[in-house]
Image 1: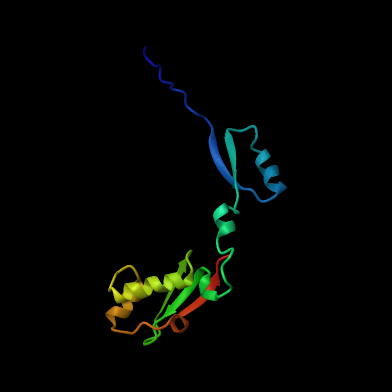
Image 2: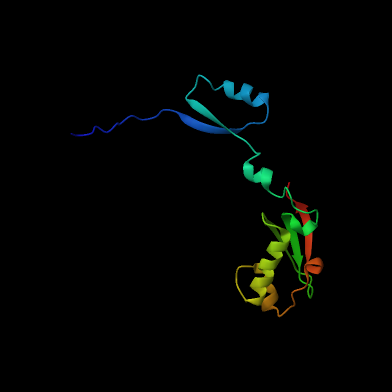
Amino acid sequence: MKRQHSTQTFKHKWATFTYEDKETLYITNMFKHTDLKIVFCTNNTLESLLKHRNAPTEKYALSGVHKLTCPDCNKAYVGQTDRCFSIRYKEHKSAFHNNSHTSKFAQQLHEEAHSFGPISNIMQVLHHQR
């Protein structure tokens, strides 16, 4: 028994809209009788709802944008992380001690034979992630 393969082509194009409020429905309804099909998404995913929910208020327990400053020459590195600042600091420190190229900041310190200071001296939190 032979199977027949469908050669059907789809004419629809798909677009994603972030659902905010009833205005989103109003706008997307304007495309109802077109070949554009709408898919809704949301910003409050399970990950974003659970992330940092029970995190302490300590500033290094959150994530966001940070600046690392060399304690010897004051050159700075600005980075962004989804992990806790303290974890990212430990990753930079580990890269420094292991002479790894996974951190540009640690690589620069190692090349210049500079020291790696404590988190309170070299890391500045510029922006916390919501």
